[in-house]
Structure formats: C-alpha cells, structure tokens
Length: 94
Image (cartoon, rainbow, N blue to C red; front, side, top):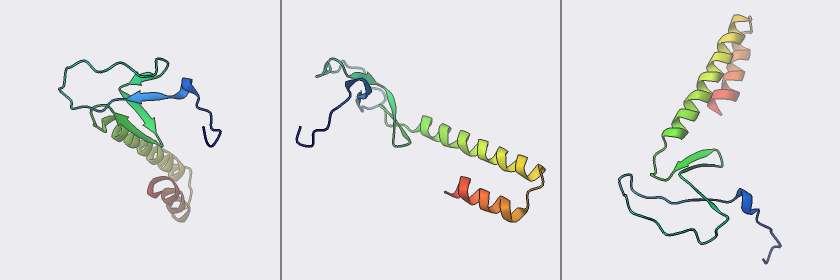
C-alpha cells in the first residue's frame, strides 16, 4: 500500500444497499473474512441496507430524552436558569 496503512480485517464490514422488497440472491463476498451486515454505524450515523434511518432516529431520540431527563434533574437540584441554558446549548443544540 502506498501510505503503509494496514487494514484490520476483523473490523471491516460490508453492507449491500438494496430496495426493501427485493428477494434475490446476492453475489458472494469477494473477501471471505469480511462480514456482511444489514446495519452499521459510521461516524455516528446508522446505515441500513434498505436505506431506512429508523435505528438512527431512534438512537437520536433516546439520547435527547436522556439529556432532557438530566436537565430536569438538574433543575430539581436548584441550578439557575442561566446555567441550565448553557448546559442545554452544550447537550441539545450542539
């Protein structure tokens, strides 16, 4: 390899994008050690082989729900509104 980069075969995944209702056999993997998956997370985004983002949206909603619960608990502990605003901007808006 020109950049002397070594690939870790154990971490490589293959995803094949297709239409949701296609039921035909696919070609075999060109590299036997590479796992074929239906869903994977890449740079924080969940990709699905049928090009749906259900898992990604569910994950984002779960994270936001946890952050709002934290804000509620901090408010109950008596943190000022200006401090809550800073925490809101750091967790939710970002």
